[in-house]
Length: 251
Image (cartoon, rainbow, N blue to C red):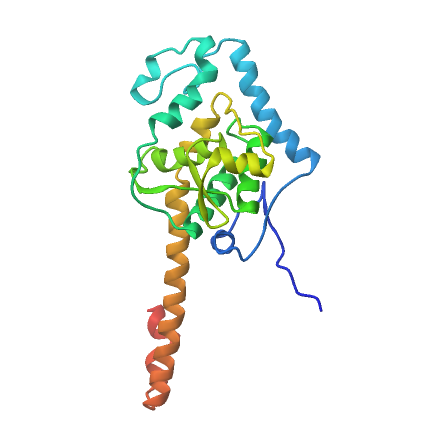
């Protein structure tokens, strides 16, 4: 007996639909990373470009400078490698309940797809690890509260950056575990985020996008449900279908 497996949802140059994000959130479809040589080279080229700017000792926001109003503060080259860890550590102050597992998967999907465009200066290895988090259901524990989203969901996304680096906690196989232990169990080496990678992970609206996709899906379900209930009600009461003529609603 054979079962029809859903086609994998491919992260890469093509956009994802809301329905695909929701499918990933509910584990209705597996995640796959675009793997052709041309695409991998496109991602690698962005990381190399960042390295070339560093070699020239160029001023790069968030790499050789501070963040926000601190952009006028220069970061010495010998401290550039340490900056990503300080960034996600500084923002690890979320509060409130934790996002549920479906919402967390949606967050990972939204962040991964954004970074897959090849304009953030991150390595292919970072994209592969995010895809592996989805594949193996390694879910960062992300507090619901702590972000206004104006310049990115900085605090909640810091939990993604930290767990990729083997810090803080994740949900794995139904248990709350340290990210370091789960990396060890899976035979992974925690990532040491390169210059700009923590900023690329955190300075975006992946959490708002993920939750909005889920909210749209719930609203779409309710709309279809309400439409069907209304139709059944009109049939049962022998109502006048002319009230629902599309020309009335077009006007």
